[in-house]
Image (tube, rainbow over all chains, first blue to last red; front, side, top):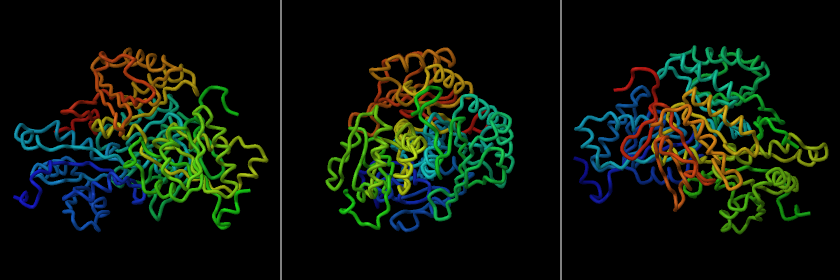
Length: 263
Length: 263
């Protein structure tokens, strides 16, 4: 029993928080306050490591293939009356832990449901990687756009391919999360073949690696000059729409589309 | 000449900043620092009003149909050596001022190009309305999604309709910005007809009005119960994908798609 350390009036809470893409200056005050007032933090090893200076927190780090187990453990901890954080990089609602927590609540056994009934679950947003990357590049997502997770751990490769093809037809700019990893080297290569079939050779493709960190690297290429090795698991890829353009060192997508409104 | 008031070493800068959706607790430290160190702020009336407590700033408010003129005025001001902010609500790169600034730079006359050559333009991201709304609702954007501006000021209604149809076929969740306004009451009604043709009647539609403000209102309905009057210009609409579900008071989209991975 750990509850004796706590104010008995404090409500059991699990806050799923977004730490932003890396630089602490991109964190919100709301998340900063949640970090200051929590007792426990659960998350993938490198995200927990970002909190190593906060000595009032009990840190619970786990591997990134264990999202559902991590969510259950965090709900159990909160149900003991503790103030618990579930950490995500970027925004928790974009290819991150918020869905995993609600999935666990949705699939809960009768016994779990009873145990977790008193836990207030809240989600605190953060700056997601595509918006941090877009800001550094200029405004490539300034018109309609979509976000696609290229990892095929959780969906078939054929779904990804079809979705990218339809997104090109809709002329969305696109942000690709998790383009490639050691265990899935083929992910981005496959999508790149689709893009080369569907788009003109001059289409702008942006690579933003480790955005907002000391070793940030930004690259912009025409599609014809792109090869699959340009993206790894720490890269956010932004594919321009047919109207995306360069101006000086920046890339932007005009606000207007298919109308004579420029000038 | 205003430059005599300034440190002659300070570089001319235009920072396009995102104030977040309304609650100042959702602002980043990076933006807070930019507010503290600037001399001038340009923006749409209600965004400039959010800064009325900051007495060191010269405030330049304008109407929301004057984006390109506002961008030119801000670049002129920065070229005089001042530290200038261009304000956006939410994130400046999502249907906001960043694209307008780059558009003006792209279309600049030779004379303007020379005048603005020394201005360093940077974009500082913020929490965009769809991510704030998604966090309050649960995790409706937890799988692949798209963002569409329903305003037909800058694109033909037929483009919007086609894009929504393709987005349904791709089975994206969708966030709609600017669904409706007094001058365009038909925007959301038209898209709603497309959704009713393309989606099952139980598809979840979320309405988030004035997210993070004192008068925030969240509603979730099945598509068959939705009518166009539910969205106004202060509403962010999120349309679930075919897999979006309710759990308790929350709405979420599972991370996995078309695979047997649940449980």
